[in-house]
Image (cartoon, rainbow, N blue to C red; front, top):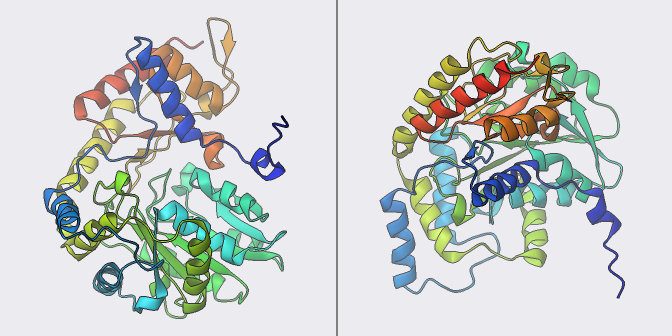
Length: 398
């Protein structure tokens, strides 16, 4: 038997967030009290009204294949949501509903990127962006940022990274993993650069839109002139605590939506009809349905910043969205404990899970190897204990 796997598969990296969560589960199973702050999942349950929409769909026997792009009902609801919340006018044939925003992004990249095309990824970026680009045989171009700039790209740096091979830019706001949120003025400045380049399609990943501590979310497609150059990606996983329902969607220029519909039709067809019914109820709902979660995450952010503040070697900023801290831990590099020297963020993440029994994710997975990602999607008392363990563990380094 020839057990050879494809070169394409071998070129991909395992998801670091999933790998660390798996390690945490294995340690817990062996009897170690591990606190897992590695996965990007709200620790809330789906609101009752949204669950009931799914139950109603089952009882109505809405259990059959739907159009590949999604039911008319869910696409109408998404179209209204885009107009209500973002000022974006997307017709039904400009909307494609998928099995999570990850599939939405993969559909777009596979539809547009050719081998050798360059895709600019402002770092830190979500772990799957680079791997999806590799699937399309594109070339990820990492555009570094720093904690001093709240991990936001400067327009001049973006302009300098663009060349004749650039086909796409992928960015998120609010950002996973940094929690950074681009203001309207910052979004406009990025748009000014992109408007000078007719070859570039930008994916604006807005999956954390409802977990935003600023007064107003800014959509890149809403900047004058950008509607035909941007694909807006969103979904119900984060803002409505519906990760397991697996439902993401895009609003796109008609030709891109048609391309994504074609790709999806050959890979999965439509997402689950029941999830579509629940998602329609979610995006139809007043966004204030997420306020309880938003208030909890804001409180937890402030708690974690206070609890981790002052730890020598850990540099913090104040993220304005999502539910992550992304501290610069390069000040710990070169320090040792029990004969082990920390050389990079991978070492720091392993040190914390082994010595503090707190699972985080190395920043190298996000294109920012001087950082780690800490999710604060956990109960207040759990976060307090995690911060105490981290402080104690770091104090042992010499």
